[in-house]
Length: 442
Picture 1 (spheres, rainbow, N blue to C red):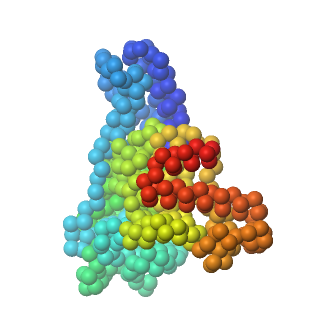
Picture 2 (cartoon, rainbow, N blue to C red):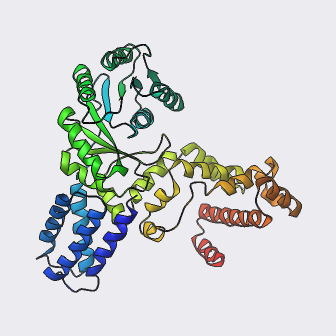
């Protein structure tokens, strides 16, 4: 996500490195490259031009503090302007109704149905709501079946009426069902439509009038770039929607839609989709996204994801096991599962300041733990509980059973022993010993 833009902005801002002051000449050179980077990311020309003009206005005439270099000051100005361009403050979702009604709209193939499921899962698990999904796509083959599959996957009820071809009537019946069965949020999944299809646009306008939703969200595939922004404008003219959902931000997106959609339709980006899993949904924070675009990482989001997977009861059990030297491979496997739930590995690494730049050409496989898991699953229960009993013959068996080599089994056992020692030292507060051991591991 944004790798190409981040790289080009980094090179553009590098122009000021080594200069003692900000001048009109070096600012012009820097901003020329910044504008080019934005255009390459498929940001609208006028928006890119206005952006660089605002940065220039703020940069010129500013005294560079003794604690800051010109390059650092320019990064701060660009970061602030990027944040403002993408919306400034974070926008929440309006859940004021009884029930709260959320209408999903967008082009076909933008990911509405999947995201409806993600949003229902988010509201159920993080906002303690009881959502109902309503299937109003009566045109696409198997659309209703897809929503039912998604609902079963996340444990959320789906309302559908297969014999009915009127989306307005289905949506009204779905809301009535929600009221009768104690659902406090209703998510209406509608058919994908082109903005130029007058009949289909009239249909969604009629749905909107009939149900008066608290939130009308426009779902857009971020990989379509500037076309996504133009489509959003056309939909907004008809629906006057409340916010934008950007899907597929985990793909090879240039980022133009995320950067410029707010300034074109004057509607906030509320959520982003960051993967295929139902948990792969994030609230959109403009300032955090600006940090990531500029290669500063996003430690706050990383910590929040870790906290979501943190189980206090399990953590106490783990502490006791470590204290008694009973930490085994089954416990290690649980830790791996928690890390995997946090999201795809490259996305997580990109949240660490500086890591995104170092890893931009490195292919981090989402199945990076597959080999480790295979080795652990090839162990007997007693071997997982007490790794010390794993001798040469057992290593050969484990290697064959997991499709790995004895060397890989040895490597995992060595790393596991080192990690166990570190955890034990951390429990006892032995900071100095741990530092010495880390030096020996190099």
